[in-house]
Image (cartoon, rainbow, N blue to C red; front, side, top):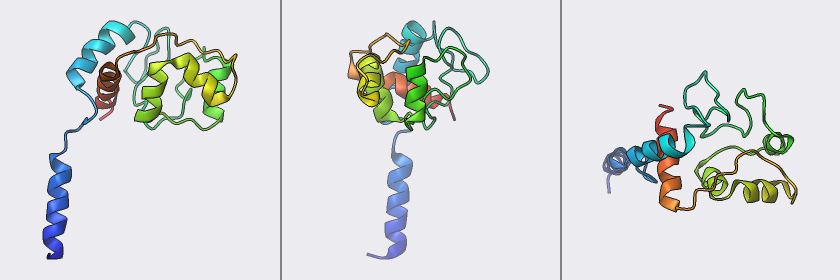
Length: 134
């Protein structure tokens, strides 16, 4: 097969992929507004009760300017945790267990107490958060 054809085929496949293959941005927006937006902001210059989630994908844990991170949340940052889809999904599933397992500390304390039970809800809200950072 000629090389230009292969390159064109690959480019076509990449371009045709949905921007957020793992979730529905509109459903994620609705979920965020109902279940997350009371505590978290998505604008680059605002914190609410909890840290700003603007451009969190690819960012180190506890790296946003926020004065109330717990020492254990800062320890996640010190241990090199970077928020990606997999880490966010695991964190949203059970934040307390995620932190305790990552830190190997059964007494680790973080402020996030909300668990998102449904995988589709987690993927949708992650897709929405990611869509805001473009």
